Length: 160
Image (tube, rainbow, N blue to C red; front, side, top):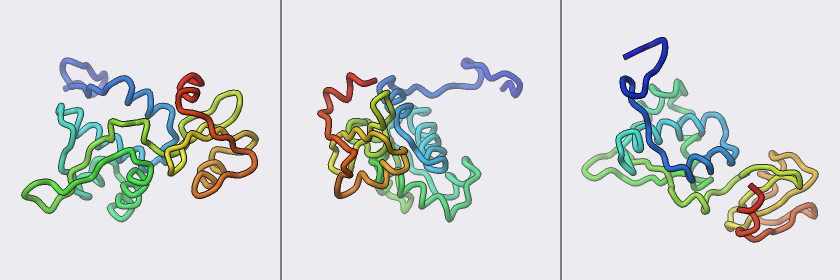
């Protein structure tokens, strides 16, 4: 295994569907949650599996994140609907996978020249103008501010 220059045929690679990779590129994921998501992707798609049992110790080892913070990162990914968690058969370890239905993901999904485009907890696409993405995430819960407009999902797809 080459340490200087990774090679696909020597060091391996992870196959991921283009729509999922493109959706990940458009959504704002907090740093620690993104690192946990990368481990889930590596241990599932990297082995051509849809789910894999992963312990908190394994997450911590692979990300360098303290075990106490792993739960918070997983909770964030679940709130954003990016991952699925199930009890692994015959084990007390949870099994994790990427939610391949990226249309159901919640959170900030990008910006365009009109403002920040996000998906709220009801699955509605929201265009917010004149506010930061942090404000959008905070406001995308139960109600909408006066700067937010609902836009149909088919129009949202045309903004990318």
